[in-house]
Length: 169
Image (cartoon, rainbow, N blue to C red; front, side, top):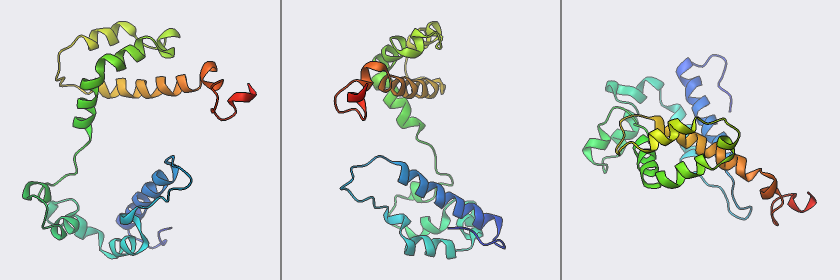
């Protein structure tokens, strides 16, 4: 899907956003016997959305106004909100619920062992009360992602039976 050369910048950006969604879905791991379906990205839906002039998507200063006006079954506060919001509250609750395990994973992990983490700063942060009013937990969650990735590629993990290529090491 490529925007025509004479397409408005808004329409080009709309197509780019759709392509990002497709690319994201294509990279998701899945079992080979399960079909990947994304009903909102089926060609008739995408074509209908692309036929809507871009300025109507923010009619009245409300992002996604066309979709919101079509969703009369939504609670009024959701249908009338002007921005999408973020998943930060979900991430904060996850971090708060799993903080002891996440902090322990970081303090005992490869990043700490190689001196990459500021262990004292992590310990200090772990000692603060909840709820936290900052977004530092997002950085720690990114470090947790990195730590888990590193541990998956450690020598011992690579030797696990069933790990791709593990039996050849």
